[in-house]
Length: 73
Image (cartoon, rainbow, N blue to C red; front, side, top):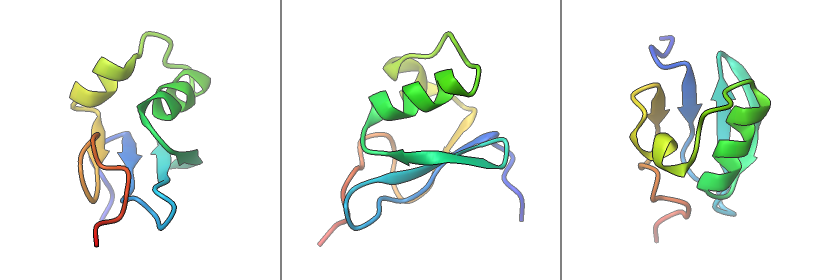
């Protein structure tokens, strides 16, 4: 099933990185909110910052929200 959100942040991998997808295209691995911000800027979204990333309804956080960057025990 396709996501309704144009931005998807996948669950943390073993190294804490999370895959970032924008409009169906994988942009890379993020290891924190600043990485997500940079990926979004490179994708053409100039007016984003960490607060925007935390609160945006355009982002689907899978496997934990914006504060989750490591795999649980």
